[in-house]
Image 1 (cartoon, rainbow, N blue to C red):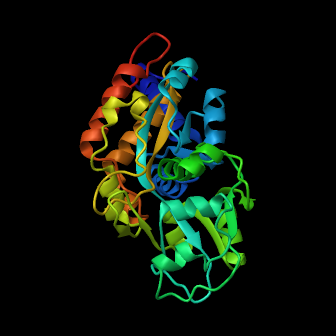
Image 2 (image 1 turned 135 degrees about the horizontal axis):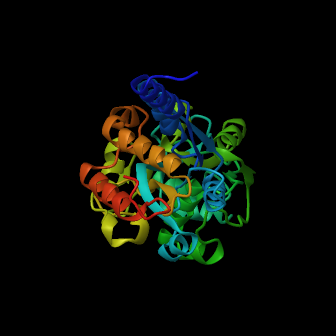
Amino acid sequence: MRFPAKLAGAVLAGALASSVSAQTITGAGATFPYPIYAKWADAYKKATGVSMNYQSIGSGGGIKQITAKTVDFGASDAPMKGEDLEKNGLIQFPAIMGGVVPVFNLKNIGQRELRLTGEIVANIYLGKIKKWNDPAIVALNPTLKLGADDISVVYRSDGSGTTFLFTNYLSKVSPDFKAAIGEGTAVKWPTGVGGKGNEGVASYVQRLNGAIGYVEYAYAKQNKLDYGFLRNRDGNFVAPEDDTFKVAAANAEWSKVPGMGVILTDQPGKNAWPITGASFILMHARQDKPEAGREVLKFFDWAYKNGAKSAEELDYVPMPEAVIKQIQAEWRAKIKDPSGKSLF
């Protein structure tokens, strides 16, 4: 069938629009930002018709998949180093911020009652503190009824940016932890049991009396896991919440770190939560499928402009406006099609 020129143009335009609306952006990686990415994806599809399919498989898996070019973007809570980004032809930018929280299951001890320090948490995970009535814990919590229950240590069994932030913090506050375990998305733990994902850790903590684990804050809050206070760098005991995450992120100097890979653990500030972190997006600088790359940038540009309220509702911290401008400048300068033309 032959169409008049104007009608043929309209048909072609309609076909292109249909193609874009039917497109699905694919991403994989960190479990930490999954709740907000899912919420953004739902709102974005309603607004644009474009779907975003995100696999919550852990930061290690996200890095592997984007390096292998099996997804349009990867996500990691552990920022890649500048030399690794360059070697793999990747660019990196922060998408959202939040916190990692030690959670526990103790009889007669409820929400926001227990006080801990980074050094005590490190010694628990080193296997040096084995009982909840250890003198170091009792000294911080003289009014709580801490029994002689064994401490059941729970950790992430999969490669995880949550583990990276947790071990990075403990390595900063405990020389013994740094020497014996160190930091990483996956480390060799000397004691305890591993659970896959936030859900695996939470499941063990909820089932085992005396358990301690670590999950991202939004997950802890949504699943009603008990958490307490942690002493920060300024010596104050603070609880995890939006305001304490914002204090930790307030003085970050994003432009001074390759790939904007700022690590926000153990930051100064009277009310700073000590295990705060950003979650990062990874994309190839040279986009072999430029339309897919362009759609990824459109999605995150939309999320920065329209997603702050929903992020806060899920207890994440949106990126500040000044940082978004830096991110967009990175997109313009570094993400290009095969001919060298910028996608943004």
